[in-house]
Image 1 (cartoon, helix red, strand yellow):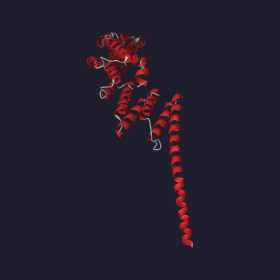
Image 2 (cartoon, one colour):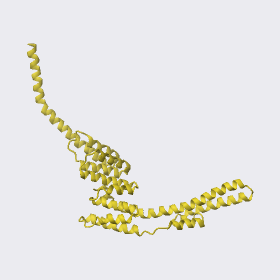
Image 3 (tube, one colour):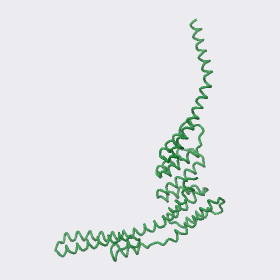
Image 4 (cartoon, helix red, strand yellow):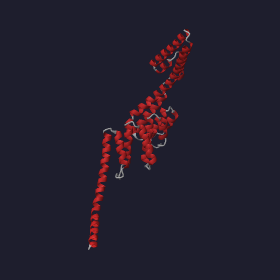
Length: 297
């Protein structure tokens, strides 16, 4: 009798499980779908509120969540990359992209997109050489070729910039054609920028200490350097006249160091000035095409 009751209870449990199992599967699928849309919607709301750092966290959580079976990977990755760009977290974006590419596997389209933004982040971080290396892998991607040309302009490598620009001939997209035309204008302008000669700046500072800074428009620095040089030299002379040879020699040594520093500083400042004149035009080009080159893809 006890065995009969035990078997009867076991059979009842089995029947109950068979009846409930489909409902549990439906409930689990519904919960998964609900979690999927809710999590993605929350990430999009953070992005719309311009809370980009938190949006990145939620998008990445959405990608790795095993309950999110059907993901729009391309759109989600694009939103993550946009968030890194719009929050100016370029180094964080580079590290994330390198990690994702290394972890893989990813589709060719997503890999191309990740490399494009990696190059963009290098460019915005002031590393055009690294940017050019990354863009060189995306030889069939027009926007990568555009930013590769810009990288060569930053590096003042005009022949490579011409070669890169040549690859953008025979395009059909009107917006792309317009951008390429403006890029060609940028290249011609940067080639023809009137640069200051560092040698002249150095010679001016040799003749009149600090005056080389005036060659780049830094008149206040030039006057300050001139006054300090003359003050130190005058003090050394007065000390020597008063037989304070040790102190006078020490001040003269300082004055000599300041004099040599003003010569070297004016030369260095001229190189920096020339670079900034060219970079200013390239920076302006990227800023004017920020939506097309940086936010859209």
